[in-house]
Image (tube, rainbow over the protein chains, first blue to last red):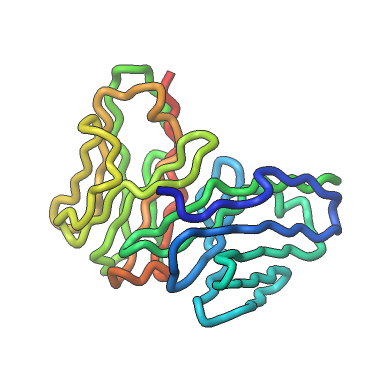
Length: 109
Length: 115
């Protein structure tokens, strides 16, 4: 069954603005990860946040985790055209990764 | 160090044909995983190899899909016969340790189009 569910499904913003995507999950987790997939390309691991962490930064990325609400958010600051992609949250399930449906982010020039 | 590689990058076949996808994991990684993303849906786990053994194949959709990993090195995923709903991107990942989902390294994927 689906674990992560991203919100919104699609998002269009102007270049330079900040983009926020949310993810909700259902069961307890050890960690939560965010991935990016550029059109026609492979998955790129962006950032991992562990269940005992509340916030993590990596460059222009900021991830928060609220285990009480079973939710996470990914913030991309100062968006660029190259950020146009699909973003997935993923949680751990035994040995496998469980992905959500993704948020399609489109950066407008 | 070379990452996970997949071949081909794209494949276009007709319904009823056979396609074989290949994944070469990072050298030394005993754990190999297949995932796929069907158009517009989430990325789903297909199966997990530990060396040449299938550890978990609970995600395999049906018996038209056959995965092998002879010798515990590269893996192949064969779809026979292919159906329209098999179109999507097939990802392979490998890891040194099992259970360390944060250590799974993904390949670039194979985009399969079934006409």
